[in-house]
Length: 63
Image 1 (cartoon, rainbow, N blue to C red):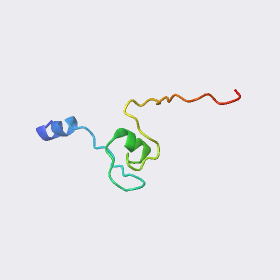
Image 2: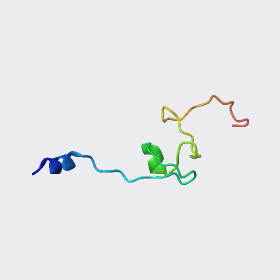
Image 3: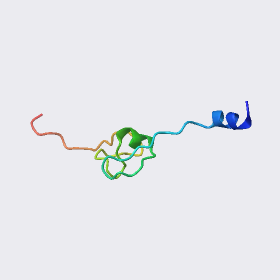
Image 4: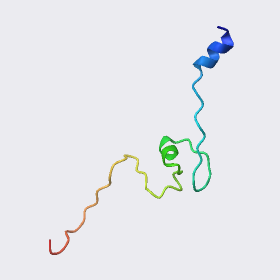
C-alpha cells in the first residue's frame, strides 16, 4: 500500500452539506443540521441548558 492510499484511508469521510430551509445558509451545528433550520430561522427557542424554564404563576381561580 502506498503512502497516498494510507492517507486516504485515515481521512474522515466528508459530511453532506446541509442548508437552512428559510435563509439558505450552510449549517454546521448538529441541532441545526437535524432540524434543517438555522438558529435565527428556527421558531422553537433554544436554551443553553436544553431544559424547560419554569416560571412561578398564580393559581387558576376556582381550582
